[in-house]
Amino acid sequence: MLNLLKYEFRKTLGVKAIILVLTAVLEIVFLIGLYGEFDAPLGIGAGLLFTTASVGVIVIGIYSIILLRNDLNTKQSYMLFMTPNNSYKILGAKVIECGLSIFIIGMFFTALGFLDLMLVSQKFGEIEEFFEVIKLMFSEIADFSASTLFSTALSVMTSWLFSVVTAFFAVVLSATFLNGKKFNGLISLVIFIAISLLVGYIFNKLPFDNDIYDMKMALITAGFYIIPTVLMYFVTAWIMDNKLSV
Amino acid sequence: MLESIEITKKFIGKTAVDNISMKLEAGHIYALLGPNGSGKTTWMKMVTGLIKPTSGYVMYNGTPIGIPSRKDIAYMATEPYFYDWMTIEGVGKYYQDFFDDFSMDKYHMMLNRMELDRSTKTKTLSSGMMAKLKVAVTMAREAKVYLLDEPLNGIDLIARDDVMKTMIENAREDNMLIISSHLVEELESFVDSAIFIKDARLAGIFNIEELRQSEGLSLADKYREIFGHAGGEY
Amino acid sequence: MQYDSKIPIYLQVVNAIKADIVTGNLKCGEKLPSGRDLAVKYTINPNTSARVYQELEAQGACFTKRGMGTYVTEDTSMIEKFKKEMAQNALDDFLMSISKLGMSKEEAIDLLREHT
Image (spheres, each protein chain N blue to C red):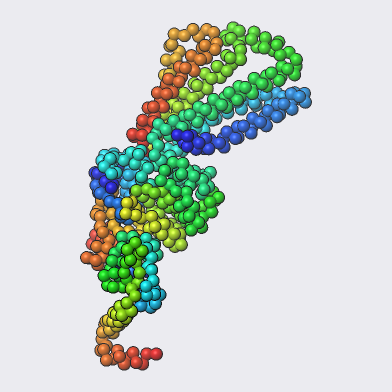
């Protein structure tokens, strides 16, 4: 299992390196802007950093989906499926790698964003005031604190991991039963959307008090999305072991 | 022992393997012969477990093939299948990570003899070098069944000699080699049995020395007899 | 080695090794390669190597020391016998070709004398 994980990590190394290098460059631009007191780099750096953070986590998820597609539909599939590993391990390594990457990169960006905000407020000397303003802004809908910020990040990452595993399921389904048929890409997209909508619908029907978004609510969201994620993982691996031809 | 029992694979609009039953024993080098598209590759992939049969099954030492049998069954595909970012050394490490029967020393020895540089990236290899690498990494496993799909296809004479030597060297009493080819002459001297696949079906298994001794026929003669145009004269 | 694919491979290898013994490429009492090495050298099946040595041994061209391997015979009269046998075969082939041309044995002998 560790070996599988090692190679999954190796396969995604390139895209992660690009994201990290881009982040480092933008962070430098941001810091130059901040301490050199150039408004333009400060604004651009901050804006692009925020974009990279949001897009980066999504890119890592999408890249995992593309990788799985290649690992099922190209000759490289033999590399995985001729080894004495069952699909629970093969898929498990992919899910864990993707989950860990999303988690680590997500937390990294959250922490970096937090740090940058602190630097900004420190630079302009009104750190307390800054947080007061933010708290005031969000008090109507959420309880703003570091713990809420991080648990919200966690819930976003968990629901994103759910989306990735749903996509894994759709990709495997398409490779197994629709291989070579017309519209198989479209059909797997429809399956993906249908499952996402269904799970979202169930979540909204749950009897939780949604008025205030606090840490408790964030953790409930994270906990909820783990269930269909795990379920989907087992079903997908079973299909791969018993029905899939590569 | 490997047993193929009424195994069939249907793809959309085409039967690739049609009801093939046969028993193969250790201590032999088999040639799996038939024109392109006759079902050799599909049959091999079903034995490896890469393709799930439509019906029928494969038994290895009395149990149906599955994940555990992959420890003993080594498959080499015709097409290159290594990851683009791998070096020749990296390919060996990958096999070492996943196959207990892989020997890095044996692999290095074969690479040296075939004059392959360990640090070369696999995506830059010529077809002859790739053919040698695939055979080296596959035969560096101490497997019980080797399934080699077209190992001599499209490579020059020198590479072919290297590949054939490597295969012969690793044939033992307790293992079997199954080598597919649509070219017959190059296998003629060292395989002992020939399996003919015609239009997805088994057309016969022959001991080749016996063919020569009792019928005065070469493997190529038998191939022509089975696959030639019936009654056609030139 | 080039094989005639219609003739059993083991016989062709047996003849090749006997020829090596007669011409002195293989010396009296010299150790022969292991079955596997022989298979690699001649591009033949390892099972065929075993049969080659069986046949060579049956004909008296070599002998096996238990656990040591196979050696070329030390009996020089055997080697003479093989030489004669092979010469005989070559003559048979020659006369066969000559008779196909419609020549008699005597004409062939005359031709041989003139041949330089």
